[in-house]
Image (cartoon, rainbow, N blue to C red; front, side):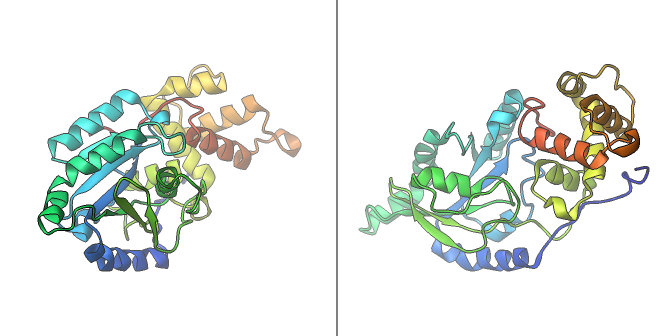
Length: 287
């Protein structure tokens, strides 16, 4: 447990390298992109290579999972994107919250494309958009919501979608689904941690005890009440993550033979409850 601060999160499976090539090759087929971000970590969940990959194509940003992100922080992110000329919408793709603003946003952002098509006698030609994002941000949930039926694979784990799929979602818009893609190396260790906290990196490639300790340390400094209220603890100020994990394990009765703490079980519960919003609406980074 003492070495948890030394480990770094890295994950770039082979299919992701292939996805980068697919995105590049598919650009000629689309008018622009829809980037799905996790509203809790908009910076960390945005692929820094995306701008290079989609070149000068316009894009719309969807801050997904806004229902478990801090609403004030989400507004700050929307204002930030507006300041750099990008339209961003707060949405929850599973419930449909905020999705109604998508169609009007497409018409506005891609008005030049629509006018160009009309001038060429191609009025009514669909706007074709590539849906991009890292794993587990909600791309398939978004497409299913827009298509009105579960035609894309959806799961609450990283790395489900593998193949390209086209979807006609009405209102003159077609969406191209692509597999989630990370980038080869996380230069900032905190980015790797935040991606792992939210489930964008497979749990199988991380140590869950290490992950939960880091998460608890982050929350103890930024949102201590989230821990104390959820787990009925008192003073956690200045305590290391492993000690808070031990306190939670004992409080919840996660014990094994001999009265030792079942750290594996406690770690899994903490990560699951954070990802499910049971610790409150939390955003881990601001613009």
